[in-house]
Image 1 (cartoon, rainbow, N blue to C red):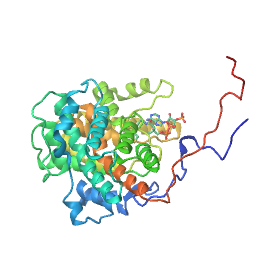
Image 2: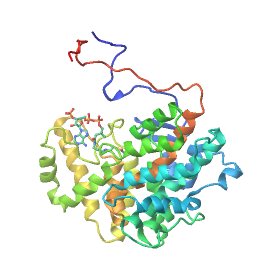
Image 3: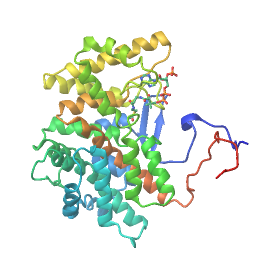
Image 4: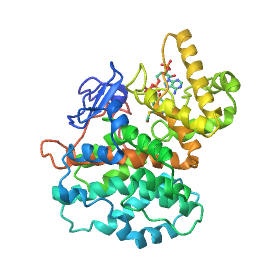
Length: 379
Ligand code: ACO
């Protein structure tokens, strides 16, 4: 007995799973667009705050929306009390999920209205607050006092770095964090965004949907790859060791080198050429080019192997944000929370797109059953 409904596509590759006005990927031109604006142009001219308003409201910032922003500082006690009960051995992504739920429990009650305007307010607050929560967590992990609350008149990038490092960043550092936030903010139906859309299609609340996104992003095939990319660079130690390391690493069946490969791009990740020159400049300014050179050697050797195999596995953005964050002095377990601090903008935009559109049905595919045939249960 089978229940074959239609052709199965492993990993849902190239399946159109819904409509969106938020992001267009153009693999052939190695570009992508946030509501029609090229990432190449946004990377040069926009701030993360501009990108938040573009993604959430299609560039239509109503006056009252602009004045809203973060609500986190209103719920400081709840956040601090929750942190007190947490285990410092847990991964920051798991603590982040817990804090988002705490924040949600503070502002969203059983009888909460889910009208579009209220949900938009939550969405806007969350897009600022996830980055701030990442910064607060960093200080909590290190038992630092006080837990710095965000300065709402400063940029998200500046606040994150201030909270992470305990000092205000210079303009260059702030620019680099802002760029990473812009590049990571949105990317169509990637795994974590699809998880958020799935949850939104069931009409769950925005906080629950974002927790689904956080849980999915944490995986090593997705956002968790930027942490692993840095870990392998630390193991490699210097560019001369790259060949030997990669050959050994890829000997294990099913091994995937972190920071390489992409479910959509086969020719290259458009974010790489944008971020790479900045990593070079940061490395030179910090007089520490070792990580830049290792990343470069990894790219070159993977390209050489690809020629032999006639199939490219280009680097993705995670290979390059890893040394960027490292040189900015951010501890490795916070790389994925930083990814979440950016992607929260895309997640919230997708949540709003799905949740209040009655034409979007609950997402419910079918499975190809390959288990045992019907049989009697013998007690
Ligand atoms: N290292 C070595 N080989 C790879 C890699 C890699 N990173 N990625 C793909 N391949 C090869 C596989 O060996 C496989 O070859 P085969 O057909 O000869 O067995 C082929 O490419 C296809 O591999 P899949 O895993 O099926 O590729 P898919 O497109 O489904 O996966 C993914 C994409 C999950 C990103 C994968 O490349 C991977 O795990 N990369 C490492 C983790 C990573 O960097 N993730 C970040 C993604 S981007 C982001 O989230 C911002």
